[in-house]
Every structure is written in structure tokens, then in C-alpha cells.
Length: 82
View 1: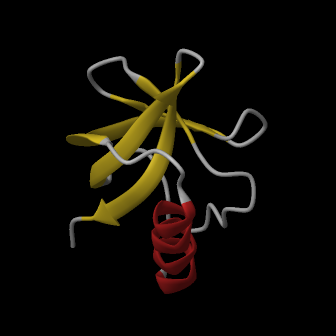
View 2: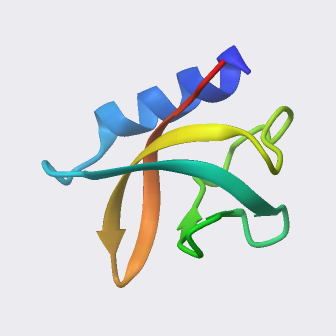
């Protein structure tokens, strides 16, 4: 889990976009093939390409920072509530 959060934090630091939006919610589903997370509100967010999905599963409460790139909500940082 720490590796995942570290990787996502590093991605945030390398992001060329200065402004990110933020949301929070509960994971409804995870698509490992498309590398997406869908929250219970129906919004879908794209994970970075080299993410370890271990521990990311439906029912987990998360906070997501994201950029919208070509209409896709790309996750730049993510924190899991414990």
C-alpha cells in the first residue's frame, strides 16, 4: 500500500499541470484491465500505468486528486482512509 501511495505521490510531483481537482468517496469498482476506479457516485478515474492494485478494492473510502486530460480524469494522488 505504501508503494502505491509513494508512486502516486511521485506522479503528482512530475505532473506538468499546475492545478488538480479533488474528490472523495467510496470505491464501487476497480477495472484492472482499463486501470480505472469507479466511485459510488458513478464517476470514473484513470489510474497511472504502473500502479500496484493490491489493497485497492470496492468498499474502501478514498480521497483522489486528479487532472482532466483530454476529457479523462487522470489520478495524480490518492489517499486511503484507514
